[in-house]
Picture 1 (cartoon, rainbow, N blue to C red):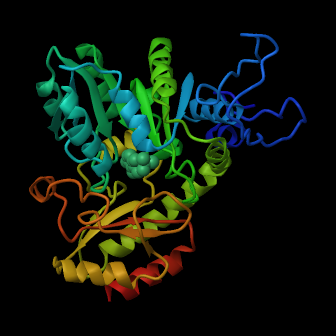
Picture 2: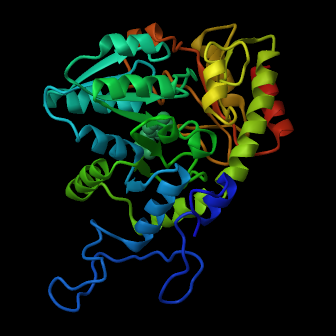
Length: 384
Ligand SMILES: *Cc1c(COP(=O)(O)O)cnc(C)c1O
């Protein structure tokens, strides 16, 4: 079993897994069971009913904690289920300050589901932390940020926001999906909760939907565990096994995502048909200094627009690539290409999208770990 003193690559491989006590199996078995036999009423081995506890999920939750340098991890049936659990910490009248440029499904959950329960969401440009400070009120209970953001790769200073949240007596939750725990660890920078769509880099193979929360505070863990078992959005043991297995190769995958990402970002920037490239590793980016400070490297998520800003021109690229598959999602070993305006961010109204800088023609890439030369060639042909 790993501990918090090991380096990332070691931690990712050993996190959470101990030889199975009954057989010595090195890989955590898939405990496909709904319940556990008790020796006498209330006399059990720490497992009563699988919505509350499952050994495969326990191994994964221990791994979640270790990979984010956290005390606790909790697994959910999806990333949005993890987000849903965080918002259920709140009461009617409470206010959440959140980014105006974030995952479309998070925006939909906030506006379409939780607003009607009397929770107020205030959207600001979090890249300038003064906007957050100005939005704080006595009712602020949570600050929710994503960095880098999806799909414009905007950077928010996690440590600076954590000072504001602490002064306001509010929790800070960071959606760390885009960076992954290999590149960024928000709890070390003062955040209270880290959220991941484990569907993406943690799973890493586009074969599972899952969410994660990591935290250090005992009371926060108690409250979130209570929500997890009471609301029941838990992942099944097979899905837990898949994510546990995915995490083992996170370090090697992320290194390759970063290397390929840099090559593709530079290729796009030098392509005459490309107007603007959004990637957090460019030194002339507004958020570069902060990205450099809080991230180990810059990842494989890139967005770009063409000089021809028509939907038709974007559609041609989106339908011509052969290696970059046209699909939602990200973070798998295979490269994906996506059209945020009509796919991942279709739930955000057009005026709001455009106002936030998300153009109709924006194309988003999740650069996989194939050979970078093949990926460049695929894009070169598609951009034409
Ligand atoms: C995918 C994603 C989510 C939602 O996660 P699901 O596993 O799809 O429910 C949340 N935030 C970000 C940044 C994402 O990319």
